[in-house]
Length: 309
Image 1: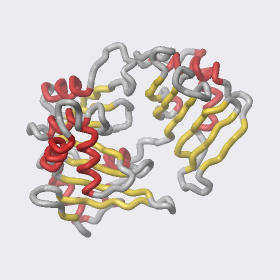
Image 2: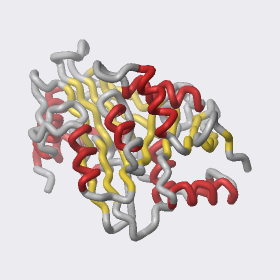
Image 3: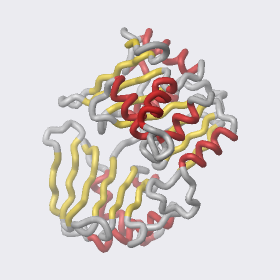
């Protein structure tokens, strides 16, 4: 149930959430909205709007935080959550005046849960390889640059998970969309502003104890990199995404090692673990013309082997 006050605050953004060819809605100045386009032509559009006021956006952020069991104030000036489903369920990042020089910032990723058949990405031979890897509970990592459709591809690949499997999802933004019945979704705070204070390490430990057939981690970063490596090298199947400017097998290992390294585990240790952990790598790149390119690599054994058409 959305409060009248939150509905009023969201109403000033509603028309931008419904526009075509928009990837991101960005606000960093009062009276102005910047729309990042999907096709990149032009890359962005700036719209003047007198209704865009920081005071109203701050109120919206506080109300969203409360609704999601989080906090947004001077002590917790960063909020990463999702809009109500009525407003698209899009992920939103708010940054307050305590750390934002302009006074306030809002970024909304307009990314609908899209489901494309794997055959729209890959050949029949490649799809058979992926389906078999999934059935054998291999660890699958999807690597790509910003806006390259990593989560969309993971949602498509998740359709190949057997219908009777038990699935646990762990994410800080609700983006993984599954049709499976036997599913548990653990939703964490991206900024640590939630009241529960559950870490990724704790969430992954919970998942292991729930006896899943597979655990899906929304995105790997420095908060969960080692926990993911520990999980998948301990016999638990998993699938996740990770960001890299250049999506290559070498960068996949490097990025996973960087995210996993901490005071107790060196970069080189994590690099070795990463090579052991990843069975299948899928890279996805967004080209300048707006199209996407995806490749599959078998990472088992020495080196890696691209699975060609």
